[in-house]
Image 1 (cartoon, one colour):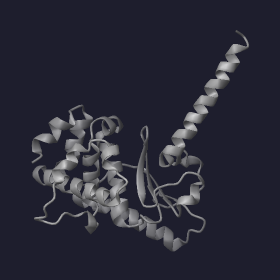
Image 2 (cartoon, one colour):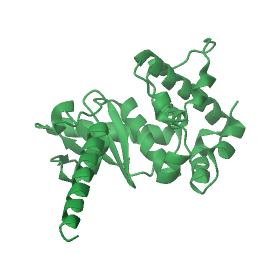
Image 3 (cartoon, one colour):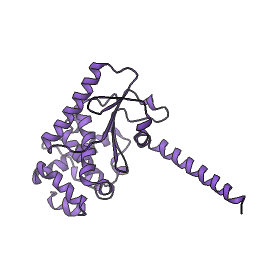
Image 4 (cartoon, one colour):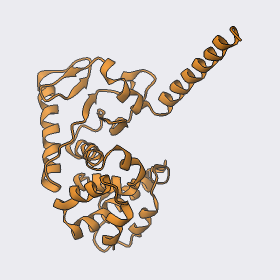
Length: 243
């Protein structure tokens, strides 16, 4: 028995190690979020992190202004944001070695840690506001309810309310079945590989949430999220005001 225990431990450590590596490979953005403290980066005056080989003062000021403008857009639509995610701008998908990140943007959650990762193709106010809104939603609704109560279509639809890119707008009078997006409660149904279908999913989610938000009032959205955080079911809080 004295010789078997170390062997069992060795097997456990090996299996655990492979599991961690496998998770990191499948979720590179989450892995980077977890390891941000160890990633070389410059810290700007507003706390934003930038992973870049050559950061000019003008670029630093532009990034700070971009983050400020994105937060301002959220404030204009919903009210002042209060979340304080770790924000990282990076200059290329290859910067993190084997961890290939979305070159536009993503928001990751590791427990209570929220990371907004903005790539070289996402450095505009629409994408930054969109990702910061995901952080705000998570802060308002809480980390548990974020994953157990909020359907993906609703989470994305709320974030799209501060994302004004025209390709995600459904024209008035267009013959589009936007209601079908409400069946996409999980990410695997919403995030598809077909870019046209994915664009349609985002547009439909934006449209459906906008109809709901216009009924209840954009300034009351934070209060609705707080109700979910306090234990009320999404269906009870949101569904009664859906069309």
